[in-house]
Image (cartoon, rainbow, N blue to C red; front, side, top):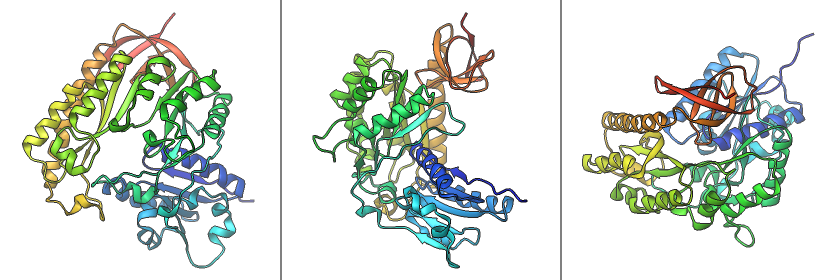
Length: 423
């Protein structure tokens, strides 16, 4: 008798997508969905959407009998493109994918025509909590605290894929954290689309800093809590105080910086200028001296001159950034930036390469300063883990996946730290 395979979930993009993929995996199992592949897409750049389409074609070649369901941000923005693909059997929007009933086989594949269920996400006003018991193959787990974004940066399509800001009530978040800690997870990451907007839509307008304190107070067995990307314009005194007071909150902030030139930031319609970001970094360092900063930076934004780019390049050292995510600007249909005078693709790629080189140099200086230290490392897979500063360390010696061990950093080789277990 032929064995039917459990649903496979293929994930692109952000930590929020990773969380939602686990929810879908669990819902698919509960719904009895078998011999299916769910592709959870990203659309933050044109390249991300292209990679999703490429993966769908590959998955069909490798799994000719499987049903392929496409969901996520790219599917929400452009469902017709995916429904037109002969490899695709169904398309679900970002709201529908989280509804357990959407994954019932009769609802997905009950008709001869393809299922295309994509509602107007801009009309959604309530956040929903989703309890999961773990993350397949991961040592760290993600916890969704909010959805959506109320800001309108000129380059960004994500608010139209995710809808308005919607926060998960703190009690439901604490329950999810407790459940994951009980399952053995030692590090959790609070994630969402715009986590600094957490609580703005809830009674009493609770803050992200207050949520951090509540989690750590209510779940004393959680050793490490980490934040995903934060908006420098919204890092407030409450969050800085939480960083200063809560040593279980990891000393690493990844900033949604996007640019290091004030004119570019203005044309992006960001809510900060470079001086604001520098002031935030200094305030956080004063409160938590061991903190490190990462940042997202877009290279070659429309109208960016060489002088503007040079300001941004210099800001990497001025801000003391360590972990950089560099993206060449990607025109997204329907965004104001697409109507601005464009920087040519070769220049965008060249500027991205220069930013990455500066970032690699900054990271190298930081890593060199780690050699000789003993640091606690969360082992994520065989022989590799992360320290509190989010730095990867390759560890010699047998260690258990998901455990936290003390490691002596012995060397920096080919841009990576190496270490051995402390006695």
